[in-house]
Structure formats: C-alpha cells, structure tokens
Image (tube, rainbow, N blue to C red; front, side):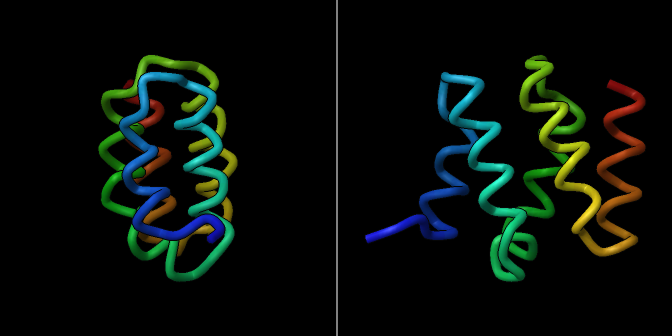
Length: 79
C-alpha cells in the first residue's frame, strides 16, 4: 500500500509535527485529498501551534479552491 486519503486524515492528529506537516502536503497533492482534507485544513489553521505545520498549510493553500484557500489563509492570519 501507499499513502491513502484515510491514512492522511488520520495522520493530521499525529503527535509529531513533521508527520502532520507531511500529511498536509501529501493530501494537498491529489484532488481527492484536497476535497477530504479541506475542513481539517481549516481547523488546523485555526488551532495548530507548530510553525512547521502552519507553514505547510500556507503552502498547500496555494493548490486549494479559491474558497477553501481564503478560509485557510484567514484562519492562519488569525492564529
């Protein structure tokens, strides 16, 4: 097996910040990952404390739909 959307969503709650950041990155690389992760990306942008994960969320926002990207970025700024 490889990386699946389900596994990626599960890894967004991993205790290691680098695992969470890679999960955001890999979910952002596929349409199904972006669709499944968009709600969690918004939640993470609001509550995440790790700068590593926040930086990856900002990078991943570039490939999200305009609506999802703006919601993530607004939450990043407020965080």
